[in-house]
Length: 212
Image (cartoon, rainbow, N blue to C red; front, side, top):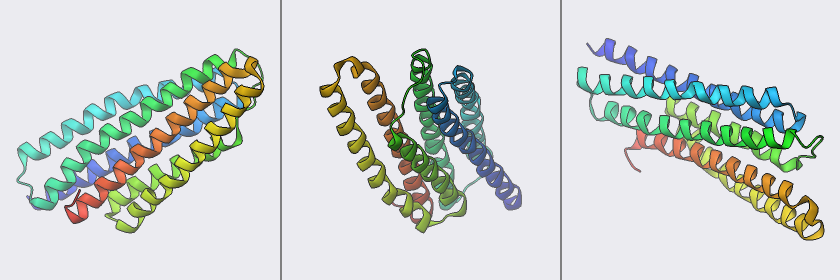
């Protein structure tokens, strides 16, 4: 009985890892669409995030079946309840990527657009945080989880820098105001992606320690 339960927990971890990989790919693809101005790339990102809806439902159902069919001990209950929370954060990351892709589609109609360099840096850091956060959960790795939380300060600082620079650009050139505001919104979405990665890392910590 325990072996069956452990095997199902491993399958749950694998499902979460697959969903996280899709989210990571969506971050990369939507960032690439900003740089290239390619509509098809932006639409590909939207399609990727759409596939995460079914993943969310499947993982939630798997969690509920584990709770109903098995008799999980305390550490198992923590892992399953954390997974149910984490899948929501992963779905939210997909939503943020879809929102960025929608803006990217609008920007692509404006011709060549110069993307602030720190947008790419934010995207890389947010993707790294997500990858480490999921790894922290599946590996029950407290050190990696805390590293994710610490990285969030760097993302927050990048957002403040981007926002400050773009506000200055608006003041100097009002003709570029709409585009600058679009990039501020994109940076805010990336900051939220990082926040969701922090949430996942915190749930990874909860799995090990039982403390929120």
